[in-house]
Structure formats: C-alpha cells, structure tokens
Image (cartoon, rainbow over all chains, first blue to last red; front, side, top):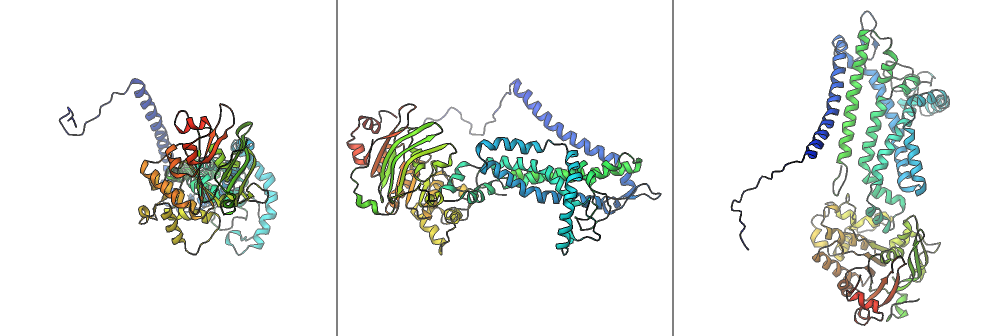
Amino acid sequence: MVPSQVTTDVPRTLLRTPTRSDRIYRGLAIGTGLLTLVILALIGLNLLLQSRTAIQSQGLRFLTSNAWSPQQAEPSFGIKAVLYWTIIIAFIALAIAIPVSIACALYLTELAPRQLQKPLRSLVDLLAAIPSLIYGMWGLLYLQPHMIPFATWISTKLDFVPFLRVSRPSFSSSALIAGVVVSLMVIPICTSVIREVFSQTPQGEKEAALAMGATRWEMIRTVVLPFGRGGIIGGSMLGLGRALGETIAVALIISPIFVIRPSVVETGANSVASLIALRFGEADALQRSGLVAAGLALFGLTLVVNTIAAFVVARSRSGAGVDI
Amino acid sequence: MTVTAEGVTNVEATKSGALEARAVSAWFGNHKVLENVNLFMPPQSVTALIGPSGCGKSTFLRILNRMHELVPIAQLSGEVLLDNEDIYAANVRATHTRARIGMVFQKPNPFPAMTIYENVLSGLKLTGTTVPNPDEVVETSLRQASLWNEVKDRLDSPGGALSGGQQQRLCIARSLAVQPDVLLMDEPCSALDPTSTRRVEETIHDIKQRVTVVIVTHNMQQAQRVSQQCAFFLAEENQPGYIVEAGLTTDIFGNPKDDRTNDYVNGRFG
C-alpha cells in the first residue's frame, strides 16, 4: 500500500458553493413553507384576540357550560354541549365513512376491471366537488323523510342502547341524519387517501401471497390491508377534520339544542360551525366574540386531529420492518 | 415442432410432481410471446430454463403455476399437466394449483411486517392449513433452506430486516413449508452475493429429492451445477420465444445438437 499524501488524519470539513439557482430554489422552498406556518399562526392569533372579550366575560365557564344565552342581562354561554354534538356528528359520519371508504378503495385498486378503474376513481373524486349546500338540501328534503321510519324502527327495537333511546317520538333534525349526510361528504376524501396507499402495495408481496395459493381476499387481508394501515388511519383522521368543520349541511338539517344527552336519533343536535353560521349575523359584540372563541376551539381541535393524522401517515411503512 | 427432454423414461412420470407442458403458447394482448412449447420436467430432479433476456422463460415459468393469468391482458393456449392432470382444467382451482406448485421470485419478497417465524408459516395460514407442530415446521423449513443457524435466535424479528440473501432463503423456506410438489424459481440468485448463491444452490440440491425444481437462470455455470435437464429458449426479434433444444444438462453443454445452443452455452451471444 502506498501511503496517501494527506498526512493529517482528522475528519475533513466538506465545503460547497451552492449555485445561484440552488440558492433561489432553497429560498423559495423555505419561504413558502414558512409562509403557511406564519398564516396558521396569524389565524390562531387573530381568533385569540377577537375572542378575548368572551373569554374574559365567561372565563373557564366557556368550556364547562352548556347554555348559550349571551344576550341576557347576565350573559352566560359555553360550548360544552355544542362541542359534544360536533364530536358526536363527526363520529357517526366516520363510523359510516371509514368502512365504506376502505371497501371503495379496495374495489378501485384490486377488484374493479382495469378499464373501469379510472372512470370510477374520477366519479368518487367528483363527489368531493359537490357543494356542501347541495348535500344539506338533499339530506333535508330527501334523506330525512326516508330516515325517520328507520330511526323510529331502530329506537323501538333497540331502546336498551342509550344512544338509540328517545324521550319523545320525534326523529327529525337529529344528529344521526346530520351524521349520515356528513359521511357522504367525508367518503371521497377518505377514499382517495386510502386508495393512494393501497395502490402502492408492493407487487412482489401480493404475488408472493397469491403464489402460495392465497385467494384474492386472503391476499388483501395479509398484504394490502397491513400495508395500507397508515393510510387508513391517516385518511380517517383527515375525514374527521372535515367532519368536525362541516357547516352548512349540518346547519340546514339539525335543530339546535344546548343540552348533552345520549340519544342521537331524537330531534336536536348542534355543531360549532353551524352555531357560528346561524348566529353570526344577528350577534352583538359579546356574542360575536363568543362565536369567535367557539371557532378558536374548533380550530384547535381540527389542528390537533390533522397533526396526529400527518404523524401517523408519515410513520407508516415506506420500507421494511417499520411498524406503527 | 416437438422438443422433449431425452433420457427420461415414462416410469418416472407416475411419481408425484411430474410436470409437463404441452403445446403451450402465450400472448400479452396481441403480442405473442411463446410459441408451441413442449417440455417434460421430471420429478426429483432440477430442470433449468436458459436463454437470453426476453425469450419467454419467465412467462413460461409463470404459466406453470397459473401466475400468468393474473396479468389482465395475458392469454395462453395448450395445457400444463401436473401428474397427468391439466392444471388449467375447469374443475381445478388456481389457488389449489399454486399451493402445490410453489414459486420463488427474482426479487426476495418476504412479508416485511411479519416476523421470520410468521413468514415461514404464512403459506399455511393463507391456505387455511393448520399443523399440530408449527415450531417443527418452521425449523425444518428453515433448515432445508439452510437459514436455520443464522436466524434461530431471532425468529421474532421482522422478515424485512434480513439481508437480501437471507430474505431469499426465507422465501424458499416459506415455499417449502407448505410442502409443494413442485418449486419454480425465477432467477433466484440474480440479486444475491456469491456466498448466498452457493447456499441457495446447496438448498436446491438438497430439496430435489422431495420436490421437482424448475429454475430460470442466466448463469450458465449455475445451470450446469444445479440441473439435470436443461431447456434452451430463444426468440428472434419481435417473434415469440420457443425451445431450441432440450435434454440432459450434460448433453446441452457438452454435446449440443443445435449450433445456436452451442453458441449460447459457450457465451458467444445473449
């Protein structure tokens, strides 16, 4: 071996001179990335400032009180019940949307004839383009009359389930109907996220399962679903974010109540977004501030949900041996 | 054109695991990729499929365990007999055939989220087979694939964490665990280092007592080392592939009848 000319045996600092286009690209990328964070922070700050009057007036009661009476001589309002119903509607929506979306995504990636896959994908994506007002009107005018007999039936047959027990036989404008409508709006979002992940399942693993004599369903269960688990969770969280924030369709359907009770089939529900939409026009300064505070709570909730979703999707398997 | 392996008596054809292709042609859409392939692959021995890239060897291999039909535009004609029964007959299930005729792929494809232990048993689980002694099956299969000594202390670690050569041997163990009659190997060593290649070749040598082996390889030395029969595939440009010559490996390499075989096995083209 010929000794090298370099005599010092210390790690060398590697210098590089970025080209001008490198610097421009870096600047742009960092700038736009930071811009979204700045906008997010500014929105939060703005909401915080505008809701200050309400928070000062109500203090912690804003989170623990059910009632919404900001116009009384002694104003009292809190978002506990509203937040409760927001989450209930979102969960009903997801309980329907997640299984349907997984089935849709599986059909679109694994089962549908090749020639049909692309048009069907576009159709599902098109569902996301329908304005939520249309969903709301459909829910109010078509779905509700058809849902009431079902709600009546299920609440009489299964009245031992607290969620289905009613105090009076009134089934219109319920959380269930709103949840079903919101689920339709969530399905296209969930489906497209899950579909993308499913379609990236390594061909080799699918063939390995099939070559050992697996049926298509066994292959899906052993290979596609475990691989797509991150996508299923991420897509569902994304759908949850959408369901929590849905405004006009829910506002059209529900009849607002400010109490917490288990029954989801009985008349009456609420949601933060619909509360804001319904009250904002007529609100005085204090109520307006209260509504902004409610919006701030919703903003925080969806931010947390979406952040968790992003983490889950990022941690899902891209190579080998990583598990959630 | 009919080319069958010579030196094979019909007595062996009655044993379990004899595979025979009769007048097999194959298409992808309108493109014909295989033309009238006839080949007998006798049990308890290794048949090597050699030939330049794109001559239809892998397609032929995938026809032998009904993986070909998974490609949406793929078609075929002719028949494939496993112990004298057509695997493409209407009353034969593809899943059943694939469980009897295992396959090892060019790229190692263990299930990365499963442990080594689960990987070996995955074939049994997929086909709904329960065995009284899973631990024993795992050990036997891994020993047959000469992987046992390397992984016996970490059967619970994920299959994806092994090296490439170990992954490939894990795939062989996984295929052997279901006790197939035939094992098809599609260039199993093309992504492996020389040591792992030698291990896989030893494995092939050991398992051929129990399993009929059909191996596609681009490595002439490997074909000579592991196989008893050899079939030389060739395709002219834009023409479907066909078998130029098939027979005992010693004849194909030592005394080929066709000049093109002679040129290929001596490295003069392809």
